[in-house]
Length: 273
Image 1 (cartoon, rainbow, N blue to C red):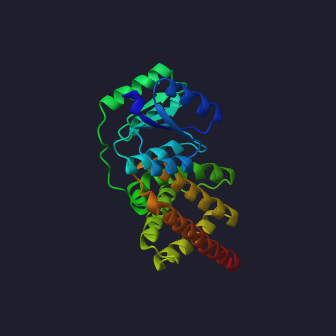
Image 2: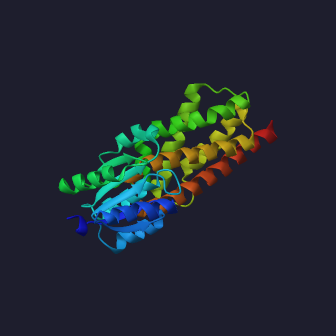
Image 3: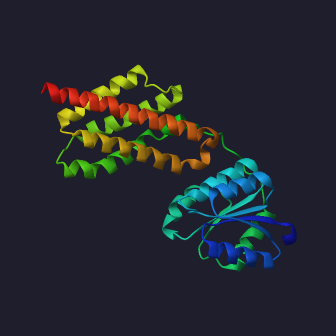
């Protein structure tokens, strides 16, 4: 059976790409190697595989999830294994174990890896694909999580500036922004919707009265964008990757447009003061 098993091995470290596939070939596996997500996706699209073995972090943290997602969508019968060198990340991995067949802590022993491959092949079942989610749906479902990330990131900036809006004010503003961004992306419009314009203007005025400077508004928008990216990364296996890039572009445009309106409103209050 092993001689017929075709393995895609993905790792961004050249030394590992040379050594581990060579050892797997000695055990009778046919191995194709890839050094980044692009090479892996191209390989997945060009030929069938029985097993995917991917490092968790390929270039960027969590890129292995992108490879797993591509394999699951294209070849649902393929066994998927994740390698990670960070045991402390085990909790997060446990949460996605239903999305992969197994994971191993690096450096995984060869016998352990071969045994895992053979065991999963013997008990191979097609993955039940979940309905893909667009970015607006992911944001709607994770409003509280994204808002908490924004507040956590923004707290240090506010403390340095000695500004202390109430937790209720901060949480309400963060959640309102996340919901508004989801609706803006959902509309597929390049220009801001009227309600978004009004939200941005009110926000700029409110932040002025709370003591924010214009640079702090810029930093706030950066933190909002970063929080959304973290959310996307955490939900990558469920995301509709075919729509993700254009929707992220809409997100970026919306954040910049809202920032522009907020700063204009902020500066108008400054001039009137």
